[in-house]
Image 1 (cartoon, rainbow, N blue to C red):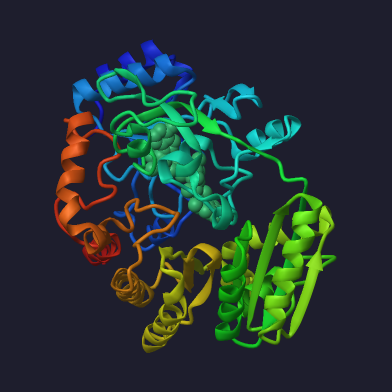
Image 2: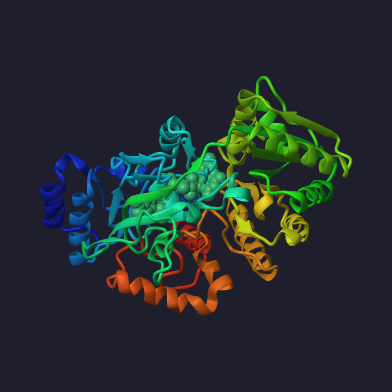
Length: 493
Ligand SMILES: Cc1cc2nc3c(=O)[nH]c(=O)nc-3n(C[C@H](O)[C@H](O)[C@H](O)COP(=O)(O)OP(=O)(O)OC[C@H]3O[C@@H](n4cnc5c(N)ncnc54)[C@H](O)[C@@H]3O)c2cc1C
C-alpha cells in the first residue's frame, strides 16, 4: 500500500525534505543488495522489491522520528548499511520505508587502554580499520566486503570472514549496542566492561537479528592489539581430499588466523586479475595465515609447512612481505565475483553467481562437498566450492543465467538439497551471510521448534511487525522466494 502523502510530509518536516527520497530511480537503486535475488528480478517485472520512500538518517533523532511514524502508521522499515548483503537481507520485500544509515558514520571514541571503540552504525569497516591501526589496534572480524560494508550491517548480519578461524565472528567483538526500538525508545544493551555476568544478554540477541528487532544506532566494539608479524602460506594440492587432509593436520596442531580453501576455477580467474604474483594452478589450494610476535610466527610457519608437506603438495610457498600478502588476499576477498571472469565479455552480461553459505562440523566438509558435486551434476550444474575451511564455512556457489527459467528451477532444487544436507550433517543453513529473504524458507530445517520462540521475542520488541518483515522466516506461505519468482513470471507470460 503506498504511503499516504500526509505521512511523507511528516517525514519531510521532521527529517528534512533533502533526506527523504521518492524518486523512482533512487527507489530502484535501493531495491538491490549484492546477491543474486535482485538479478533474478530480471526474469519478471513483478518481482522487484522497491521501497516506497528512502529516508537518510543523519542522527539518532532522525531514526527515532522515522520509527515512531512508521510504528504509528504500521509501515514496514528496512534498515540498510552499504547494501552488500548476499541473501536479500536489506531488500525491502514488503515495501515501506528504507532507512539508510550510511550518513551516521562517526567514530566517536577509540580507547586503547579499555581496548574499545564506540562507533555509529554507518562507519565503513575499512575506515575503522585505518583509524584503529593508528592506535596499534584492530577489530578482528573482516568480511571480504570490508572496503564497503558498515559496522551496523556487520553486527546485524553477524558477519565474519577470513579471520574467523582464530578470532571468531562479529558476535565475539561487540560489548554493547545502543538500539532504537520501533516505539522510539532507546536502549543500551551492555557496558564498557569486558566481562558481564548479569542476566540475559540482549547485545547478543540483537547481533544477527538482521534489522528485525530495532535499529542499531551506536556500537561499543572490543579491540585487539595489532599483531606484530604475519605470514601467509599457500599450498596447492591435486585433489580436494588432500587439501582438506592437510587442513585437518594443521588444525590439530594450532589455530591459524585464516585457513581458506579455493578450488581450481577460482585460482584460474584470480590469476587473471593478479599482475605480479600468482596462485598455484592446482585443483585445490589452501591459504593459511598465522600472526603474532616474530618468534611465534616463525614457529607457526614451521609447523604449518611441515603439516602441508606431509600430504605431498604440488606447490608450497611462504609469503612474509606485507604487500605480497595484501595482493593475494585482495584477489581472494573478491573471488566469489571474480569467478565471472571465466566467461567471455558477452556471456558475463547474462550470468550471475548464485551464492551459497553453510556452516559444517570440520569432519563433515569432505562428505558435504562430494554430495554437492553429485547433486549438482544430476541437475547439469558445476559447483564452484570455496570457503573459510578453518571454521567449516563453505560457499558452494554456481553460476546461473537469471533470465532462464530452467536455471531458476535448478537453483531452487539444489539450494534446498544443500540446505537440507548441511543440517543433516550437524551444520547450519547460513554461517555468515545471514538468512535474509532467500534463506527464510530453510530456517525451519535448522530451527523448527525454535521459530515460534523467535517470533514471540520479535513481538515483544516489534508488536506491529514493522521491522524488516519477510526476513528470517517466511511471512504467510512457506514458498521459496525463487518459487514465487517463477509464479510471477508465469503470470507475466
Ligand atoms: C564482495 C563481498 C564479499 C563478502 N564477503 C563476506 C564475508 O567474507 N563474510 C561475511 O560475513 N559476509 C560477506 N559479505 C556479505 C556482506 O558484505 C556482510 O554481511 C556485511 O556485513 C553487510 O554489511 P552492509 O553494511 O552492507 O549491510 P546491509 O547489507 O546494508 O544490511 C545487512 C543487514 O543488516 C541490517 N542493518 C543494516 N544496518 C543496520 C542497523 N544500523 N541496525 C539494524 N539493522 C541494520 C539490514 O536490514 C540487513 O538485514 C560479502 C559481500 C560482498 C559483496
